Image (cartoon, rainbow, N blue to C red; front, side):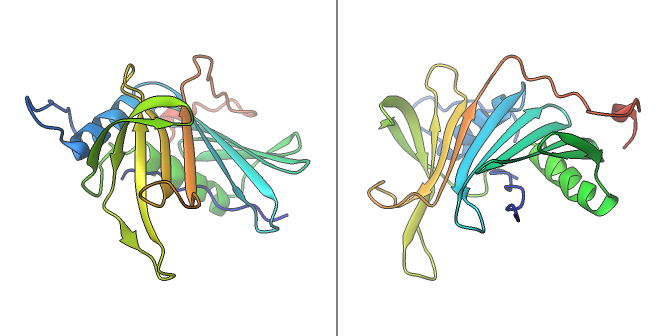
Length: 206
């Protein structure tokens, strides 16, 4: 079964100093993702596989250069671990080192993910908004019209207490239509990504 490619990172930054009387949506979104990069985090994406089945991707990220991806489609589970330019994969449990071309794809994804976050568009401040029964600070990109005529916008939901991103959702601006893309962020304290095989000094090898 062919699994979809690695998801691209949301943001491609510096410290944020809030304005006294105004909301700077772009700066606040950047600040949330800068803070996210300070410690390990988890990104969960549910989509449709090429075969039309539900596909769940879970990415664990451990700064500055480690990733563990788990993809589940039906009974199939595929895992990938990447550290710097090294990568390993496991199909239902059997680990092996990835060949150079495939390892490079993983390495590029890791490199892009850990780049200093930079918002590519201005975000409108929505203030306190409700999403899935909880209250968040909402920020929305300018609406864009796709080739099929659908009007879509990206909404970032930030936890008002931790100031960390909670969701990245692409859909209709008012949320009434179908969600095109949804990422859920969480912050487990037990993420510890360890290479499955080999004894190289991986952090020393670039």
